[in-house]
Picture (tube, helix red, strand yellow):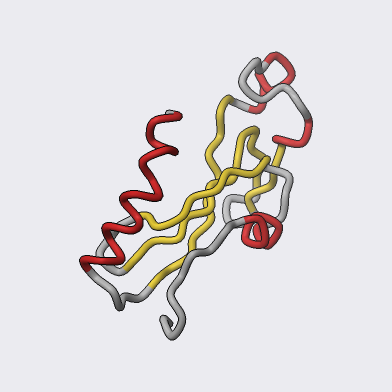
Amino acid sequence: MPLLHALAPLFHAMWQHLEPRTDYALDTFPMPVCENIRANRSRIAPEKAFRGYRASHRDYFHGVNVHLLVASGGFIAESWLTPGSWHDLTGLYGMALDIPVGVR
């Protein structure tokens, strides 16, 4: 995984060189790491900050929120993980969005 983080800026620069003008989409989705019944025994995410609510499903989950900035060609330009209890906008403000000026 550290190798992927080290290579991400290189892939991003290469993508910007190949396709200098593109459209971007921002998406956030939950990624549960365990069932709710096992949340108090979870070693991956032991804190209560990882317990979030999915309004679309009307249920709670125990895990992280994944924030992705995706280019129109399907390339993931930026990614960010936040605890499940954090609001989506908090994750958006934490992302270092490296988008060229004039892109919609």
